[in-house]
Structure formats: C-alpha cells, structure tokens
Image (cartoon, rainbow, N blue to C red; front, side):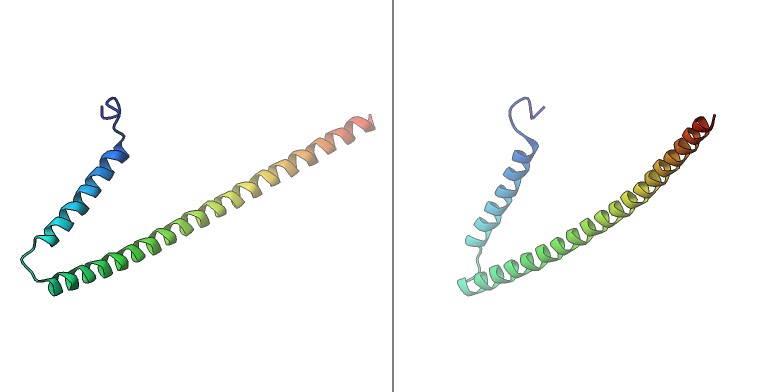
Length: 103
C-alpha cells in the first residue's frame, strides 16, 4: 500500500532512523546536565556505538564467510558428482561405439 503512494519501505525506515537521531540530539541539547557532563555522555555514547558497530561488522563478516564456505563445499560436491556422471556416460558411449565397430 505504501508503494502505491510512492513511499518505498526503505524510505520509511530511513525516516524513522533520521527522526530517532534528531530526537536524541534534541534531547541531549535540552537536557538539564551541564556541558561537561553532556560531552562526556556523548563521548561514551559514540564509543559504545563504535564498539557495537565493530562487533556487528565482525559478526556479519563471520556469517558471510561461513555461508560462502558451505556454498563452496556444496559446489565442489555437486561438481564431483557431475564430473563422475559425465565420465561414466563418456565411458559407456565409448564401449557401445566399440561394440558397434566390432560388428
């Protein structure tokens, strides 16, 4: 329904994220704490976000590597099966050709 009105789901999600960031920024600006405390809190928040994003990136990287590893194993297995089937078919064809040539 949102696509009928021209709003993609990604746009809606981005709007919520931007709104959240703006709301948090305004809350910090109008907080009753002093400048030093607010800067300390912002610094701690930035450090926390950096640590979490680093952990998230590492986790995603590990999962992607696992998926690619499994995919590679499956590919190699299927490739071996197809190679064996091709070779068996080729050998069977050669045997039948030899039988026909002997007649």
